[in-house]
Image (cartoon, rainbow, N blue to C red):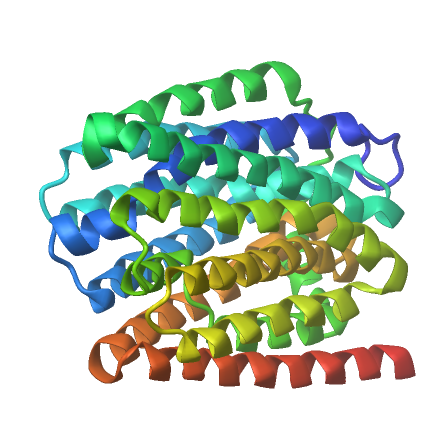
Length: 393
């Protein structure tokens, strides 16, 4: 397929990549559904340690996306990098079972996230190249929904396995769905006949792209990301509210259920009324999560409410932000455009998770969640201003 005017691969590629993500997320989330408590309780790490691990892992993840998207544009191929990234991640996670301290966990987490960084920008570019622009929101919504079905299955598997095999056994079993993901990727995902472009051409087009609407779209996302905390803190908050360790994986599954349910509707709605407007809804859901978390004490049911609202935020924001990149960036440099987007997000998430963890340890979770509420409000104002400029133009 010529990326500029050829025939499209259609939703077949989107669905195939969705199933790759489904199996990978089943592997990942059965690990991550118990990893925060493993770090805090078995390895005796605090909220700041959790923030450092999550922040550095996400930075590694997003930093690698810069190079992978750029390289995929230059060589005109996506699938090789996508497979490499999935292979690294799915082979790394079982090694959590051998960790003895939080530095060991950090090392494995970094390798896993490096794999995610290698695959994500080329994968998103391949999705965008397979679908006509008018269906972009739906395409990313479908992919996100399949991804999140795996994210529901993973914590459910962890819940079933944990009483019998413990934390380390769960980590080891994660290899099985990871291998299934690699098989589906090799057999089902098709590589479009791409056209390589020179590195100099990519750089020139990136410079052009980041001076216009694309940059104005990235700024509010960056502001918002400076206050975003990972799901790990939601699970620790649930534990503080009285949710037993055995049921923490189900709390994580609840996040992913709402995430899954809103992905496709959010994408379809964004195609109809505009992606910026739907993104505002996601940011508002995050602000509600943070505000409610500052007031919730002593009742495990509050943890379920927090998880549900947080899941709505993730389902909307992660779907729409990715679709916005495709809408605002020139088609010939989609890989590089996703790379720049992910670099900005990664740097912001490193700062936000560390700041959030420090605020939690020093001043308590109430102050930490208040900080995130304020940054979300500022981002909503900035997003509204962006919409106003686009409308005026």
